[in-house]
Length: 560
Image (cartoon, rainbow, N blue to C red):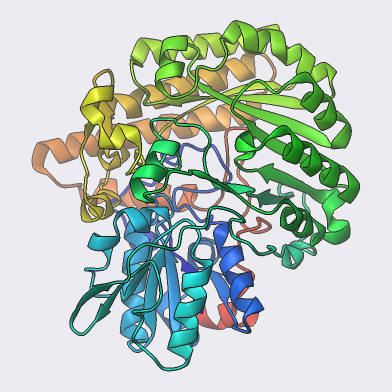
């Protein structure tokens, strides 16, 4: 089996009618708006199949296309021989690219089975299976058993999947369903993910080793905008128990696979905010014993003092808080509101005194009751934080909710109740939205307080002002700030010219398209994030492709 991760827009390298605008990916993680990071759950599928004597390989087509602009993707697909190809929609960011890439794979390998899975694929399963290139949709949050049974059946030459749970598939000239019964209540993704491939990746001044751990699926919390919340899991997965944990011993075994490279490696601890104290402290013991350099912890509440001390003595620990807004009314409406800003400011010195190396505070644009002035007030509050904690690693950040409000979340399912308007409902509407020229028109939502265009405009205003504040207070160098602000200025000008041209006669003039093409090539030539907003060369990230041999890439990047 090959698992293929597509770019957000399959033919992004040839497009001069879409602006892959700086910050349209929120610039919050080290990826581009091609969204080249694939689901970490793919490691579990790969290991599960290996444990059953099947060879499963992950090919990150998106990463390869960014790193090797001349790579002939269809010739590469021709070299990938397997009876099964798997695809993700990954929170809908890949809904255009994955469906288009699957079409190409089906054309080149018509006898191979095309399979989709994941949370978004589960939500849109009945629509997704109607695409001609899609043969099977595997529903569920843990699909290891169904996928294994599916591959076993295909390798035996069978196409009758009626005994395999959780499937929608094409058979007898119609769509067959096998129900949705495989819903494990414990031991989520019950295999050990193997990071050993990443041990020898070099560390450079602009790239460091970063892996991820995922100790559970679902959530103990219920944020209205999140497709992994309690409400969403009950809605999409039809389960009462919405938090399923992984065996802690398997997580420790995963951490061991980095070997001596752990001392050069950081960890992004995903969803640890749903972990109890016992498991959290045991995880910290493992991080300490194995010598990991640092860990970034997402925290829903203000971390208690004993856990802070444990963090401070285990490794270089960084805590990421996400109150979403400084305004308690907005924070609570967004599903947070578990602490006030005053309580957070009183807590921060305790965290730093306990040995925590830094606190990052994320604010979100696109929340209920949030208007332009509220966003501006959040930026002003961020300046207060920077001034108050000058010289310490307290870093406020802000980003818009893009490209989509998660289908299945409370705000998507009950929009009027929470002040939202939904623009795209179906999978096809979302797929078409991803190729809209302007990113505000890609958004599937707006609120009573901010239109889609206003979300775009106030996002640039907020980030531009926050970058300037960081420059004024010495958090970022003037060189970094000037470069970011220059890029934002260029982006806003291009977006305005595009909007004006489209409103006049519905098309983009050739001269503007030429500038858009040059801009896209520049923006997609590197990755960046708001924490350290410098251009970083591709390569060295855990999700960059390591499957396709370099000699094959060189051969397929030359004109035949």
